[in-house]
Length: 361
Ligand code: PMP
Image (cartoon, rainbow, N blue to C red; front, top):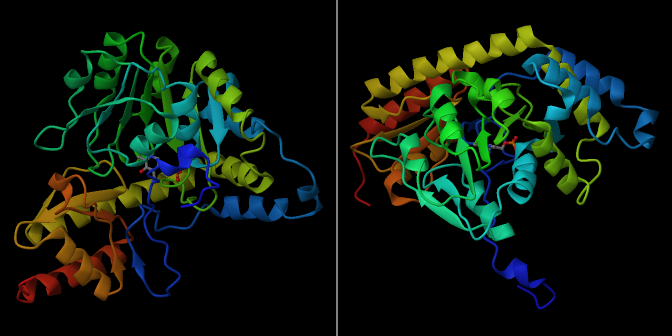
């Protein structure tokens, strides 16, 4: 704390990201990174950018990347916005589109933990809507009552559960005057994207990222898709903040990633297959595993606390994520999907932990 802080800083509750320890030999299943390397075409494109061209500023709007994304999704480049990771895109969207105080933003009680942080930063009033008992998000809960805006992660985090596109369509139709942001960070692992709804719904913004399904968490590229007036709002806020959120390397690498569809398809399907295999393995050990359409599973064991399991895994150099809040998810572990060999190491460690008599805590 310091008397030099602007007053707003005192009230912030910043997001705490999962650990990125420097220790070698760790099995890192805590931040939903992809276990496979980025496409070789990405590495080539990055190498080609390393040179005297770095003297110059990058293209400020990420034009070539936006064009490639637009082509892939059947949109116009004016319907695509790119930013420094989807976290930045979300942060800009919260300011540009989701703050209609005093009307509240509707969001789930269990969702991406950054959303309430942005609300705190911008002073967005919230109406928190609990997930149902089975951790399902029920769209009917969002159709009534005062709303300034709505944010939904689909698949949801950290549950991994997904809604079909028809449910998002039902929300958009029932709330035509309310901007709806659908965060699709994990959509490529088996959920239905809402992007085909963009053409008919001027209130829809869909956000995606290269971090998960394209193995590029380290490059920091995310994007939003929506009708041009929504994108214009994002551009206005971006240009009041940072003209060049994507550097030359990021733009070139992202473009190569989007263009290497076969590599994307191969690794995506491998992660999905490993998820199903890991879910079955966890169930065989007595875990309850929520149905996941993401690159992680959310699981709990009736006989051991989440904290004890996470600590025991850590002693065996395996990192998973656990959220102490809200209380009803405190016993769950969120486990990122690794290669089959990594999943097997995790399962072997868990089996050993469960066979060891529980120490009274
Ligand atoms: N949305 C959700 C639901 C996430 O879990 C994450 C990853 N922490 C993000 C967005 C942000 O991803 P990135 O900034 O790496 O694109």
